[in-house]
Length: 249
Image (cartoon, rainbow, N blue to C red; front, top):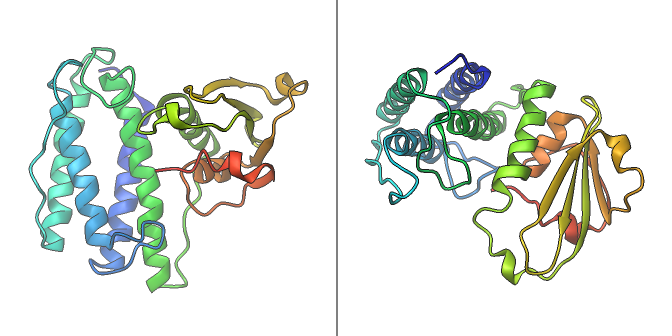
């Protein structure tokens, strides 16, 4: 696989997540994922890495892979997570980037899974850092580079928004505009009753003639956190109920 900047991002985010998780400790509550403590967060991400490793060996027609369960001892779970990530990275490094593989989202390939894992890890890095900041109030939560954050917004809206939700039962209609001001990028999401939402990405000036029912504006980092349902400084104007249709995972 040719050098992919998302592989570097994956390593960077995973190292930061592990550091925050180790400092916070196994039993620290994760305020952004109330059903988890830090051990649960680590075990979740470990399973994800293992699952993707299996997915890369499967075709799109195969059934969802079922990875082994990670250890319940915290130190062992951290080690297991690192081992699964190392194995996954070796697979990604030697693979053909656009080969079709199993995925739960459209267009599964080693390239798209690398992107998915970079952002999956980044969002859970936030979770680990919020858990640490709860137990160590003088500890901050990192900001993401604008281009990385903007790519994460794009991936969520264009790849993941239509996955895992029964849009056929959704009755709300209208347009929702996301504007990342520091990279001058915008996404217009159109909701129609009973249909998958559609997304257009462009320069913000291209949407001047549109009349969105709601707008979310902020730095790319803030918009990224907002689409993933994490604490965010992005400003919301307009219809809050429509904006809530994009509420993270």
